[in-house]
Length: 244
Ligand code: 6PG
Figure (cartoon, rainbow, N blue to C red):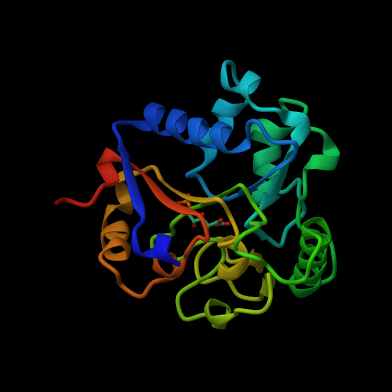
């Protein structure tokens, strides 16, 4: 929890530097390991990073056969729907680089309800982790990517939702999204997202400046409640950085 008190804020000049800085951090977190786990995010903020990972030289820097890819939240739509977060990650980089199918772990958004998809994903995560309880000394992920919505949500943890207070479950079904697209969601909880060596918020556009200012000032918004058992880093493009 100490990391929550001291987030590291890294400001970069432009979109190009932003994607490169994110790629550098990702490669640093997945290199030199027998097995690494990355939890991806949705929305537009990670898309520059995803495109970059599919290109040289970054493509050659990722040990694709040893990295496992998860998703922190997804929209309850089929993976081939343009709204699907894992579908987008696959289109932009995972399928393009030929990441092994067994290393890609989408949520089962073709089941009969967000809640059943959540249960299945939680079971999968627990099986891969090898325990039912998360141990801060042995994080589930090496890197967790996070976005920030203009209402302060992160993953599919929206302001005012009961999901914000969940401490036991790892994954929840969210019947009603607090922001567009208004489709049901499946989301990891703060507790599961926190189980990482690094949580990296991606803030890539000027329109995020007002909400980022509020979150970093300590307002009780979902993104402010996010914490990490490891490092907590906000990667921010200069145009979005709060004025000092
Ligand atoms: C989703 C997300 C969500 C997103 C933020 C920021 O499925 O919508 O995972 O939490 O990260 O809404 O989205 P943008 O990057 O598009 O601004």
